[in-house]
Image (cartoon, rainbow, N blue to C red; front, side, top):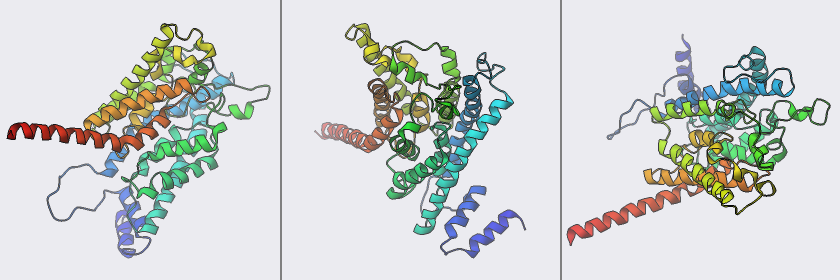
Amino acid sequence: MGLKEKLHNLKEKYKGKKMAPAFNALHTFLYLPNETTHGGTHIKAADDLKRTMNTVILALVPCLIFGIFNAGYQHFLATGEIEASNGFLGSTFWTFDNLIHGAWKVLPLVIVSYGVGLAVEFLFAVIKGHEVEEGYLVTGMLVPLIVPVDIPLWMLAVAVVFGVVIGKEVFGGTGMNILNPALTIRAFLFFAYPTWMSGDKVWVSEAVERAGTADAISGETLLGAYAQNSTLPNIDQWDMFWGLIPGSVGETSKFLIIIGALFLIFTKIGSWRIMLSTVIGALVMGLIFNGVVDAGWISDTSKFYGLMSVPFWQHLIIGSILFGAVYMATDPVTAAQTNKGKWIYGFLIGFISIMIRVFNPAYPEGVFLAILLMNVFAPTIDHYVIQGNVKKRMKRLKVKTA
């Protein structure tokens, strides 16, 4: 008897019992869902929630693999054991040592994220008696990519429990939540354990342990350096684009994020309107700040906000704005649903993100806060867009009947 038949027998054995959702979830994870609609006319398509989630995961895998290598690379680079790589394909980047060290640090984050998150999902499914949904498949992959590489595993576990319960289950589960669960987890970590989520050493593996010793190393991100003064760090702009810089595990390589964006757009999973409008909003806010500096309204940005003087286009390659625009803002559950609403929603995310960066030098990254804020206002945006369309149609109707 094959595995599929054994699982089917278990499903039949526990059908109608309390543990049925757990066995059904395991069967669905390994095989295609066998649930179909009954009666009436329905739109027929080859995709389902599982395929949609798997498509997003495929778009994230390159960022995960690169993040593993970069975690090891930044560690050995900071300790002086290797020299800076000669570009994206440099001989000191794609090495076995970098892979081993990075995997040792990153894979436990993935395991804890999925293990704890799915355990909570299974628990709620058993308690409520509903099927386990595939919504956490993407969240479980996103969480390790948006946290520092050395975040303690117990902190991550606590945050995952909070994010899944408060960010999703209290609203009714997948498809009902108003906040992005992964960003809810990120927000919990930032406000509950700020010293582990910001500073100049949390972004490089084992930098915190070495702080205060003779071999102390620094892993300050570019945003941190910009926020403290107006002197631009001596880092090649192509290194920023390829991702050879400190940062969260998955957000450093803008090249791979763009590739993932094109893949999501091609598969019609991600909204290109939200991605593009977020970028436009960030560039507009950056241009406004550059204009303030160029006009001489602020003569010495080193005594004010150093990020004001950063060229507007560099905001796209020095932080996580692109990662947020592609993988977070496009969440179909928490984003705006109307086409016009998507333009407004994305533009405000980019606009507010850069504003928070500039005005908050203590934590110069505002993407996750901007997205969470707009998650709350997305239904309001859609409401007024729909009301505007209704008024236009009513006016056209009055003209025709006049």
